[in-house]
Image (cartoon, rainbow, N blue to C red; front, side, top):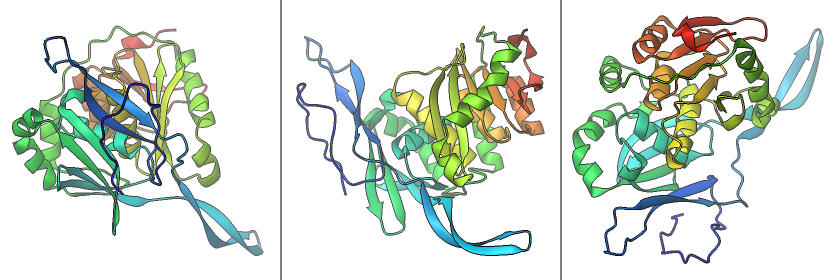
Amino acid sequence: MRLSHRKQNASEPLGVSLRCLESAMYRRLRRLTPCGSDKAIRYDVIVMTSITSTTSTMRSIVRITGTQSQHTDDQLAIEEPLEIRIGAEPLAITMRTPGHDAELAAGFCLTEGIIDHADDIESIEPCRVAEYGNVVTVTLTDEAMAARKEQIDSTRRELYMSSSCGICGKQSIDRIQRKLTPITSALIITPALLAALPQRMRQAQPTFDTTGGLHACALFTSDGELRILREDVGRHNAMDKLIGSALLTALLPLSQSILLVSGRASFELIQKAAVAGVPILAAVGAPSSLAVDLAQEAGMTLIGFLREERMNIYTQAQRVKA
């Protein structure tokens, strides 16, 4: 099914009724100035309030407890392929949990260096369905397409990403490290505020409650208020969805925000957060050595093993003060 890009009247409600797996789509609309220039650009989020993405499914199992066994049903997190295209050509395939696919595509394009700003995107169409899975088509502006052709061709060599590890490889690492801008945020928070965040994130994870099989990425304000939460079977997908949401709603850079991830802190998660300008990243699990090195280089405060009573601060500890 294809989403129509017909011109919308100002009086029309921002809503459509379509059978698809996505909750929103994004279009680049031009607001003309009196002289006819199209320099002023804005994004409208067309929310499909009647559509709910399917993120879990039931399977029959045999459950053994002690010496007893029983046939029952178990709820599992859904994992399906998503193909991200630039125009008509495939860019990458990722295994992900359906939902927020437009944000995932936008966040991926930003963190992989395909785009620099939301203005580089002409449109995102998340409802194309192929026989082998779902397809999201990202249409770039002519200027962005011409400027990024070499980058797009380079990224296409790594066509498949698993839900667990995302994009790997020396070329990807070198490419990312070259484009990081040091974070200079003056944000300071308390250990008590940090300690309260995992419970707040956990309370906002309805699919995890039923499946136990999703990673989460949560964005908090400097006061600890939950602003965005995204879940996925892949850590990197949850992060791309969150950053894509921030990109398409003009929240970047996230220089006064705290990012919390439900698992370990990998190199890839640090680089994605750094591209979005995140000054403080906390993880429930452990960071890797490369993640610590990159966080230090980027000027990011990295916290691991975040619990109510304890935490480890690995880099830029000056941002956490009692």
